Image (cartoon, rainbow, N blue to C red; front, side):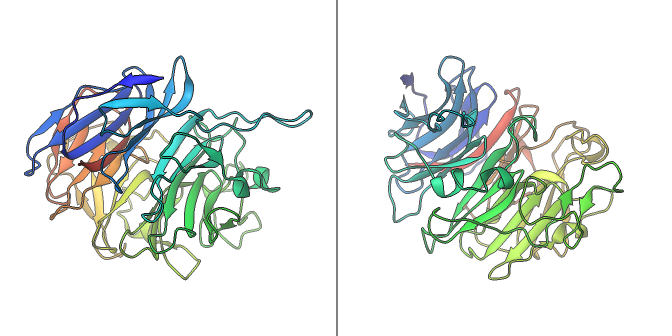
Length: 396
């Protein structure tokens, strides 16, 4: 199937994926004036849209459409025309007596290593990892994870978990070595491979786990507890990030707080305990400064009681650390004094300009941007559908 294109031009672009389509936003070199392009895939769910930085022209969009179901669209001309994948992510037909698995939606897209043009990776719900070696035209199961004998122990029941189902996300590729990768499972934890997916090992030491058992006081089960396990759906990373210039530095926004890991260590440190107590360190999204591995942004949400998933106290703000989590500063200049929204795990992005631009999209359909690394915020677009993802890109 072919979809019509948009009026996307060259230059700085935000790919805003929403519950009802893809809405590109473009700006000039000053990043002061923004233009909302005509929407793509209007009315369809777009979970993620990503530009291939290796050519600056190829775009992929993870979609759920009313007539095609879950699929992936691809454009090789910077969004002017789109074509559906010939083979989107799809499980093999189950043999007699086996449990069938059906892809509900593709959630995450990651371009492959710079040395492997045309390679892309995708994460889906139910939790599975997929690879394409032809720029998104055909997708194949990464059987080292998807068909592992312990698959059901590692992953979450598709009928449980988050409102949109358990997902595989945060596919991270070491820029030094295409064989070395990470991903996150909500729920299930963080996993690492040294052989490009043939085998995977959990990386969850130091993590707390949410605990729903009614006889346990509080939400967290720390390592060392009889209830703590290294694998399984009790672990719930919301977003994992690798620093692009220092890939041994990892950050994680988890269901139970904000963590940092400096490899080759394998035990995460909870740096979110240094957040203001009244705010807490619960949220979905985080972003890293492209040059400074000690600088990280998060957008906290209310994680108390029934988890309303809105800004704490209805007072939205980003928080930034510039010392690897030892201290945090609130950044709310220009944001509404009261606002009952949150920012989903893919909906914050940071550009590589100087100073860096920071952008986020809200569940209430607004895009906010800062040209001064969060010191002040400006509304870039409003009245969009619920925003699932924001990706900063430069169209060539």
